[in-house]
Image 1 (cartoon, one colour):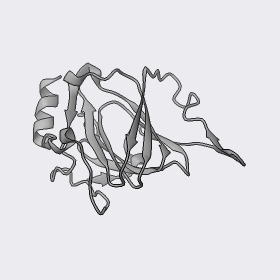
Image 2: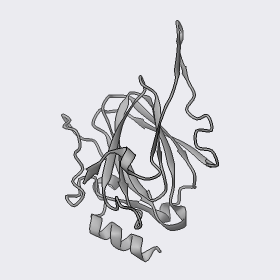
Image 3: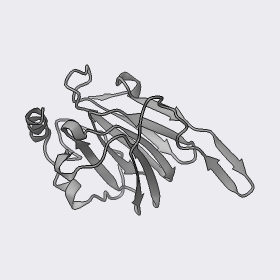
Image 4: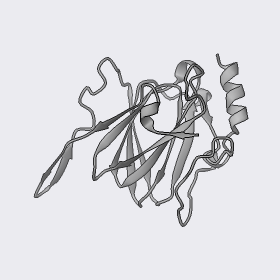
Length: 181
């Protein structure tokens, strides 16, 4: 079921100030907005086509990651699914539009699957991560799994990596998460 991001405990949308001038603009992507949070990895995703879907990705066990997501060029709809067993929103999803022309960042705490769809060509997304990437701990939920029923926007065409096209079903992800406890 889709829910508003405000209904997910720990989720936070941080509005950024953009400083415009005759030569361009300047935006701080992070200003100690999450006191006590330590980030150890920064990543960039460059996306050529509108309709590019990346996700739904999560890391299991001790490699779970919190992510601060910002769209620094173009726009996306960012999707997240709550896989925290003790959450009232377990297996529910939410979404937030992130647009470089209205700068903001979305904090997604550990325990969520994450993905997005680009709404424009040449979209660039920045991530600050609170844990290292471990390929052995990575899981990919199939982007169009019918059990979750994510309401993806209609696009002329969708572009996905082979990894994302071969994602697991919700049933398989839940089984693997239970085994990782």
